[in-house]
Structures are given as structure tokens and as C-alpha cells.
Amino acid sequence: MTRPTTHPGLTALRRTLARILDPDRGKPAPAPDALPDPGPAAPPEPAPETLDAQLERLIGAITARATTLAMDGSFYHEVGPAVRGDSLEAASAEELLAAAFRPGARLLDFGCGAMHSRPFIESLGYAWQGVDYLDSVSGTVRDEVARLGDAVRFYDGRVLPFADGEFDVVWAMVVLHHVQHIDLSFGEIARVLRPGGKLIGQVAYLEQMQDYGTFNFTPYGMKVAARAAGLRLTRVEPKHDAFVFLLRRLLITLTASDETPFNRMMGPEGFVHRSLIETGQRLGLDIRTTNLLRLLFCTHFVFEIEKIAGDAP
Image (cartoon, rainbow, N blue to C red; front, side):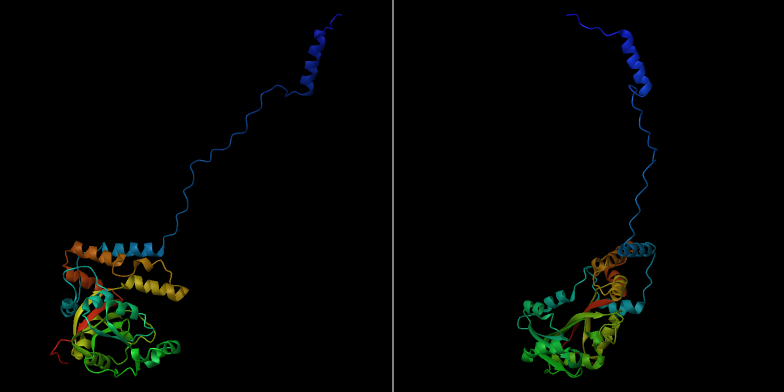
């Protein structure tokens, strides 16, 4: 059988018709339109500077300008002997209390409130006794301490209900700025201390208002009040610096939250104290003078006051 053949003219006709009907057939696909060059990427927006970083920058800028120290001579001569001259480490009131312990020692927690300090004090070995001003204690606390009998005594804010020389240590932790009768209260503390006994604690210095806060002691004011009662100021240690503390308090007052960016900066290990120490070293100040510089800008300070045998008002 003869195989049919394809006429060459017919094949050419088909191809011609295909090109007419589909003119793009067989052509390479066009390249996609090129995207415009965006140029270099824009830098990200900088994060806003935090409040603590701003404060650090400000303090750093001020201390960088230091060329000398202008300090009142009375501050150096009156308070200097009670400030450490051998170390830049600031002792806490708790550390001073631990160092003062002797076996069998009795301690009066002056202004004990809700007794927050009692577990720590008893862990050191002290026999604990609490006392507080009746009108300053909430009903809840009164109900709580009612179970303790004479372990907590309430008084009228004037005469302490204890015998002369009954205690080895009086502990006054952030309480003396609430006292309204300074001379009378210091006299009563001196009376209930044995000779050689100590009054130890921490006090507000520049704090504006705290639960009927009345008098804000300066270190020199503490010395004067102690001396009038036959006591002697023997130790003063810097605590919270004024810049961090007051800004932190401002935030707490306006936000009702204790969580602030300044929390990590509080205390004598914080940035402001470190900056003042570095400035003192750069100026060639001795250790005592550097500690006085730190104390000058504190809202709180730690103190130790001693009843020296034979001392009289």
C-alpha cells in the first residue's frame, strides 16, 4: 500500500496562518520590568532614651566639670570625725547592728510598727522588745500585737515605759523623723540605754513627707540632739542619694507604682555614688572627704550613737 505524502506547500501555508493568528508564538517571553533601585535602607528610628540613662548622662556631665571641692568647713569639722576615713564601703544599719551584738543583749525596737525588723533582729541573737506611739499605729497592727502581750508596748510618745539602763541597743529604723518631741525622746532613749549602749538606725534627711514626718535630721542635727541627751554620735554612713531617690519618689507619686527605672540606681552602690567616688579620686580627695561629699547629697543616712559612761547632758 502506498503511503500518503504531505504537500510541502500545505505545511508552509499552515505556518503562515499560525503566525497571522498568533503573532507572539515562538517569541521569547519579555523580561519583567525592573524594579526601581530603592537606594540604601533608612536607619531604624532610635529608641527613646530611658529616664535612668538620662540621669546618668546628666550626673556624668556635671561631675566631668569638677575642678575643686567647695565644702562648708563646719560640715567637715563637726561631722567628719563620725565619717569613715579608711574605706569607701558604706555600712548599712543592719551591718552596724550585727557588729554591736554581744551575748545576752536586749534590744528595744523604737517605733516597731508592724514588727518587720523583728525576725532579722532575733536572728542576730538579740532579745527583742517593741515599742510604738499608740496614736500612730493602725487598728490592724494593734490587733496583731495584742496577742504578743508585753512583747510590744504602746506609749504616749513622751515617756518610755521601761526602767533605766534596761537595753543594750535601741534600734530606730527610718523612724526618728516622725518624732515630735526630739529632746524628750532622745533623753528617754538615753535613759533606757545602759552605759556603753548604742542607738543604731537610719533616718530621712531630705525626704519631704512620710506618714506625719515632722523633722528631717541633718547629720549635724543628729549630733546636736544626741549630745543634748548625753549621747555621742560615733558613726554616719551615706545611704540613698538625693537625685535618684527624689526622682524615683516623683514617679511613684504620679504613677502609684513602685516599679521605676531608678530602682537599680538606689543606694550607695548606685551610679551617683560611684560618680562622686570617681570624682573624689580624680580631685585627689582623701577617703573621709570623699565620704562627706557623698553624704552631702543623700536623702537618708545611717547612724550609730553611743552612750558613753560618765557622759552627761
